[in-house]
Length: 266
Image 1 (tube, rainbow, N blue to C red):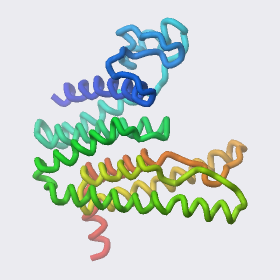
Image 2 (tube, rainbow, N blue to C red):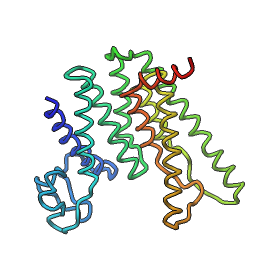
Image 3 (cartoon, rainbow, N blue to C red):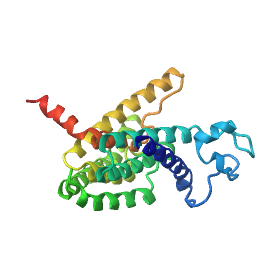
Image 4 (tube, rainbow, N blue to C red):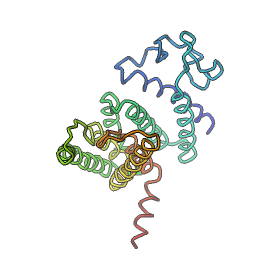
């Protein structure tokens, strides 16, 4: 059965790829997949990136190569589905954790590519996570709602302090910028993460996400310097993917991570 669930993940990955293409453009999910270069409808055999390999991954109309993102997303989603089946088997937690994971993936891809956390994605996700908390024996609605509230407040404070920091930094350097460290989409994402992982795991999720963001920023700066490119201070990077990574780690491994942390201080 694990292979059946992994195959389902492959199909869901193709749907996620399509959603990541159309939702940022405010297009309907019901339209057929299209080439991102010439906007021609793709034939059915190219709706799935793995199947498209047989046709050389090129659009039948313009012959431009199809993006690798679809193939990567399908494979990763299939692997995640297999991991979830192995961890939970056919159960209610499997269904919930699968849906949580799919939402995390969609947020990750869209924010990474567009620096957007879409309301059409995150608002239904928040409502779903809040409603699901009443049916989660592993967490309970009190800890879930507390986690959501705490995640929202913590990142809201960072969001509100961000413009003040940018203004101070710009004044010190004699520069002007309109960039902000966090967007309000990150605040809503923190609310969703808190509802999914609960309290106190949300604190660990946010800390992990910010540490990963710092590491990602450092690698970004080093890469630009190695390529001989100048790095501009306060260049914006999407924080959503790093927060998603922290949320997924705590969703899957929250208990052992917190136990290891507490054990280190005993």
